[in-house]
Length: 186
Image 1 (tube, rainbow, N blue to C red):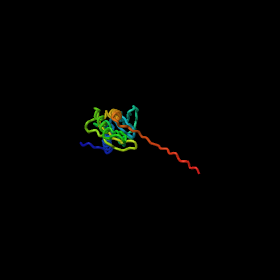
Image 2: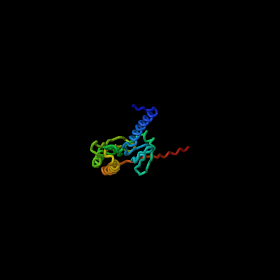
Image 3: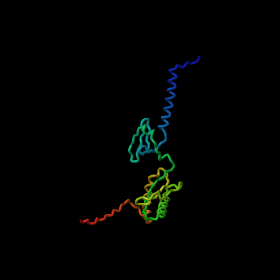
Image 4: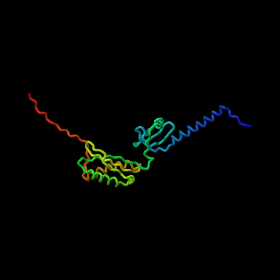
């Protein structure tokens, strides 16, 4: 004897299948492997992705709860799910300084740091002639966990070594010349 399916029960089966598909897609979105993100000027490590909210811990240990409606439609920059990261820095030297010497000193400082990767090779080049300085771009690569340590240490070491090798670190300044107006006696 053949089983008969009533039209109403067929709708329930379709609904159950559709509900399972929606649930699976939602779980895939909720459980995606994101460790760190930058979302609408909020940077932090993702601690929990819930059904309605995502919870972050900021670098200064503030708990931030973001509605998922903002998370799912936003661009998220993930800084931890990569094998290496470039550190972008700009160093200014005086217009009277030897550019070749400055590049040599900076390159030596960068390559001396064990956390800086040899491949890809660090880049040091003139990028701009500013109001008070010739600006050099410094772009070493490191592991994501070493990013801030590399940035802070290289900044300190480059300043110390540039000054020790006769290069100046200029700061914005403006020269004001005052002229005394002549007497206009009638």
